[in-house]
Structure formats: structure tokens, C-alpha cells
Image 1 (tube, one colour):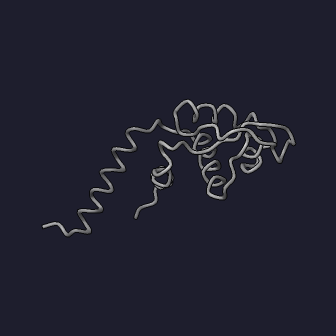
Image 2: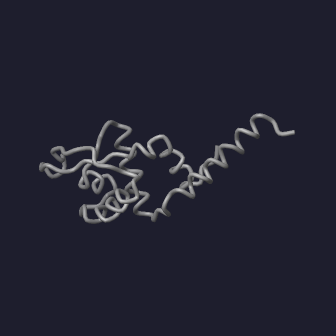
Image 3: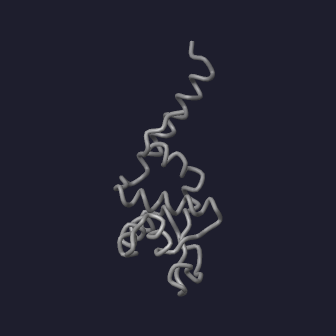
Length: 117
């Protein structure tokens, strides 16, 4: 007989596997960009490409734009509107985690980093 705790863990693991099958395989830089957007969103910041690049240590925002564009096409992030970018001082598009995955973003990170409950 399975304990309730074991059963809950099994269901959680099964849900993780099912969710993982729904996700596109993310490359290293795609994952870094997704995690940067999520981390900034947690602090109430909808980042621009230049803010993401700065956070990741890239001087050139073109290092993140292609990956950010792919994340948008996958439906993992969406536009949050436009704002004056604190890095460039110019009007730019800001980004946020898509509502489709908002509740599951922590699971994505746990799966990617191999963190177990």
C-alpha cells in the first residue's frame, strides 16, 4: 500500500513528466533568457532586451534577441507593453512570462536544474 505522501509525490512526478512533454526543448541560452525574464518579473520588472542582456552579462542585446524571439514563438513569453529602457533610455518592448506557463515556470526551472522535491 502506498502512503499518501508517496502517492502525492508520484502524481507530482507524473504531472512534471506530462508538462515536460508539452515544452519545447530549450537550449542553454533560451533557458538563461527565460529564467532572467522570470527573475525580473518576480521583482515587478518587465525587462527589455537590453535589460536581459545586461543581467546576463552581455554587452550586445543581439546575444539575447534571437533566443527571446524563439521563446515568444513557443508561447513562453509575451509582450508586457512598451517602456523607457533604463539601459538605453529609449522606448522599447518589455517582456513577461506568458500566463500559459506562469504557474508552471518554477517547475520548468526545477526540471532544467535537476532539483528534486
